[in-house]
Length: 174
Image (cartoon, rainbow, N blue to C red; front, side):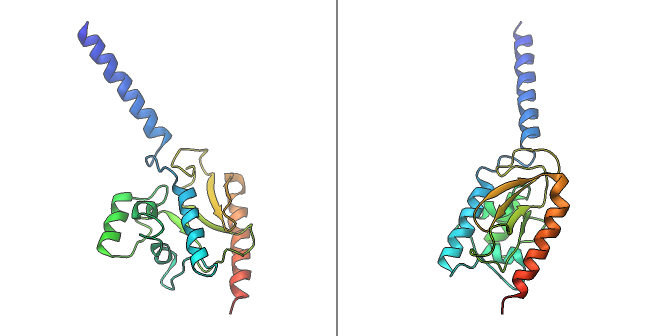
């Protein structure tokens, strides 16, 4: 009888862990996109409306957020490698796409058009907290602070439109 109870408990635990792993494929990333958006907007408030920028690349720009605005774990993104990101930040080494999964567009300002996307995770199918959503859908943060899910059917059109908007804005700046 005790063996059956133990086996049942192990089975329930296994099912629970399997469900959790399915529901949060990269682990729970509580407040990842909302907190990143808040940090980006606070940075912009402190810097004349400019979001972080670095000529070496977008991830170098995001590194400016740590430690004042975010902890280094948040720089990993929704599907990135948190321990590797934290390790690189502790050693003062630059982040790459191997650690951080953020797709960030630097050189933008908080008063740019509201429809302009600022940041998203490169992995589709992940909600702003790491929870699984429909494969191919993306959670996106915009310069006005809004966050939306862009359906996979619209993703290609969306990214093409975003590239055009960004090019026009950046070309108009001195």
